[in-house]
Image 1 (tube, rainbow, N blue to C red):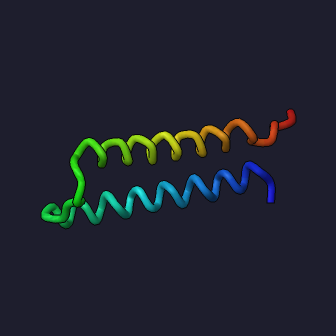
Image 2 (image 1 turned 120 degrees about the vertical axis):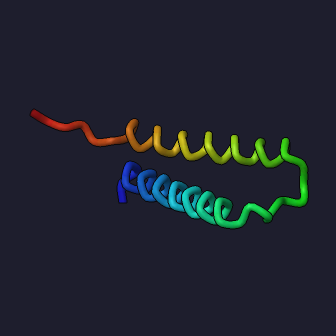
Length: 67
């Protein structure tokens, strides 16, 4: 498996997890985390940066198209 394909699969899995979490959170507004909102926002930020980094690697390692 090439690097690009591995990054693509990882990026897709991260996006699916994020979408599933958002759908769960929308349908269960009473659920909460046992820590403060600032910790939650930090976790969201790290997850978002990681997902963006993986998707950036997909496009960086994409094979060049020939004419």
